[in-house]
Length: 403
Ligand code: SF4
Image (cartoon, rainbow, N blue to C red; front, side):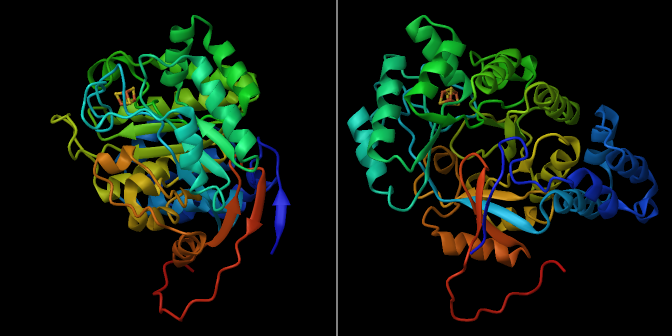
């Protein structure tokens, strides 16, 4: 079993990936006329602009966009595809906000409202601790919890399970804690890092456009606040992911501007490790005017993000949201990561996700292999990797997906 390490900025990419893009995209004439200038920019290491992004979103040939994104992803990672062994523990569904797309939040008096005590959280995690090395925890904005609650939660978790990394809290949760405790968001991040927090997930970016946010998630942090909190996280040494929720009411232009805002911050800090684009899941939540996303639109958005975000190492096909089948296809459309084993999860499942929660490492590795890739088990911060050795299973014939 091969093992290797990387730093948080390179995050497992080959060090000469810029050069390799040229090899993978040449000859430029293989691409249709509208895409040739994009291929040229990519080989010259020029970031794509808004017009390029719109062109990619509207180009008639989805397969060609996917092929180009896959070529760029192969230049960075070859045919490796990453996953990890994780569990999602959502600490509370009680939330003082009521974002219109959210099927998870409850008011404090709802019958199924819950808030895990620190001990319950630690005990809950204990069920999975032997099988995972990451806990992913996001939740509602609890009206009573202050930073001390989270400091206790993280420090007790680290004491009980030193091998488990804690990837927790979205930007709006950080903002809420700052308000609850009358301290700055940067102090929140510093104190939580000292208590054992490893990194931040990217949730809550939705679309970084305040007009859209006013309709779909009124009261949440503004676009600038989302970016500021992630900048502060990077500044105190917490790497983070970034996300995009698409298929609500945003335009193509707003999607591309969203990606460019993230790219601009990344050029300052280098602290984003992974971009996670995921579609709005409409079941049992409220947003009847949402335009929703088809399977081909999900694949296209993943591919376009790989091409637009030249300075963010990883693109995730978030299987909890898009399901295993689309995630498998996405590994040939620019994505290189499918998240993890995720033994337990509430937010996407309450919104209608049917992605299985009982995946062991071997099942996930099998999914990756079926997509024509080599499964690589990674840690939370993309700094430690190992080629996953599959357990032999009775032969099942897989039809080929990629050369
Ligand atoms: S998305 Fe987050 S902040 Fe918004 S209502 Fe749901 S739990 Fe609360």
